[in-house]
Length: 413
Image (cartoon, rainbow, N blue to C red; front, top):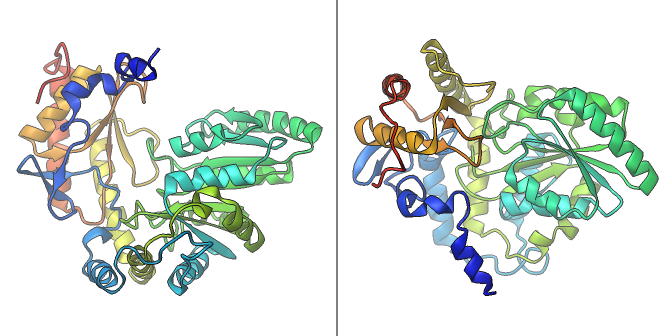
């Protein structure tokens, strides 16, 4: 059998809709300056799909720094993997400043968040070790778990009774095998927007022996008094053994980092395959990150404006009877009932007639018959953006309830 033949017969649960979805519902093209209003197919839309939490994407100091660094160094410098020929003073300066910001001894940079956390998990655990993880962890974590040759136990999302149960099982097995336990969870879960129960999990260190890795991609820059993340928000930053963060959210850039005790970070630096065998992060990106961290720490009003907008949007939705679930972060889901054709018809109405651009989540990411709109408020959104969006959702939800969007298949656009 030709291995490609099966790919063409079974395009996957999302790919099977590609003939109708591509270019509109999937792989859309937003154009213009990154911000709360951008062009989609030639018309201005209010955009709620960008993780530009603090509005840094087009901050004048950020743009100026990025441009100068690109002019000074180009995208090639430094050449080679960081271990061999790609290290610079700027890379080390950024790591030191991030360590200070996170309240950790050391930090190592990661080229990309997705591959970075996968590689970190792969480097930490061996065949005799056991992983215990939250059921709603991000796909990058799940792919990292697939690399683990040993046993793993999943606990129900944020369910501490089930966590206790899985930890008992993991402890017994680790003791038998002569291995250790790595617990993996998130600071802010990117789909539902609820915080991981970090405070409760670290309290189990009095009962079990384990190390804790927290993916705080959505918490970095948005949570805690200084923006150091969800661990700071919950008062347990010092109890988290390894903190993973990305620049792809609040930093409005690309790349990631992991912070912790110096000996462990040094071990990861010398053992993460995705970093050892990959080209170093280009200097313009590193220097741009330095500016972004500086602004995060220098201007707390950016985070204050973000939370003003978060509260205005979320409270407005709740006042209008919308279900936004258990979110206690900027991530703002709207839960509705409907099938994929209905969801796409409603999304089409929002984009074409109300000029609201936001992302829909449907089966197979969530169960059949459910629709989630995930809105990402930023510091750059205005009161008018929020009011127009609340009005649009009120009117389109009424149409959804009245079965206006019932169609046989995904609309062709």
